[in-house]
Amino acid sequence: MAYISGEEAVEQIRARAKRMGLEKAPVELASATALREILATLKREKFDIVIVDSIQTLWSDAHEAGPGSVTQVRACAGEMVRLAKSQGVAVILVGHVTKDGQVAGPRVVEHMVDAVLSFEGERGYPFRILRAGKNRFGATDEIGVFEMGDAGLREVANPSALFLGESKDRAPGAAVFAGIEGSRPVLVEMQALVSKSAYGTPRRAVVGWDTGRLAMVLAVLEARCGFGFGDQDVYGGGADQLGNRHAPAAGLRGVRRNQSLGRDPCRRPGRGAPAGGAETGLRPRPDAAPDSQAQGRRGHIGDAAGGSSRTNLAKPLLRPD
Image (cartoon, rainbow, N blue to C red):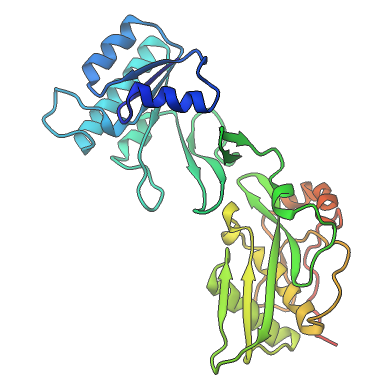
């Protein structure tokens, strides 16, 4: 394996490898940015895997544009792809991303490669999700969950256990929601709190939810269930570090938690809560979530969540007593 860095010196890479306990890994290191020299070395010495970090730092003397420009990125990526096909070597091109998470540079680079993988994660959380934006060898809905530690990334085999905690009891205002990350169902805890507003305009604050979805959930509760939130502050939260904010079934968990708080805000916590997932609509009866079958496949983790092993779907919303 060869690791070619255009951003760090060899000594910096060795120091990081030593800190991670990988100083004896069979990896050849190089610090270079000239494409002609890199290609000559890779054609002279055979490697199974070549990692280039990053493609935006390479430059070709056949073009006058500076490194990182559209012309240089396209030309350097094309030469590395031709090398991979002619030499039978696996080439991994590390690329920069824009603020919205897109691969920086021309889109033609994504068309030339066989797979596009990206790490995603929320700031302030150690968890990273590996997603495939393109994969010529398989599906793109598979993900990998990793945790960043002192020794680097390590695989998280059971993300649900991390975000549910070890307690078998669900505190008041908390419920388990079966979300979907790629094709992997993940159980997360959804939280809600309703309190008397001290100001004329009630406050709506959520973390990991869409504010428009929260407004719809509260409207359903008021119109269909008889609750009143005109003088109540509403706070909601979930495992936003796993990106469940866009799950269409997330609203139902907040509906049921708000219902329970509306009936008895000080009730004792019960043992467990059923892991449920259904899409909250404007009709009196919730709809089954599009990914309900995948959610049900992960029902056995309900034991870790202190809940039922069944997924409750399309249960009618009842008016409070």
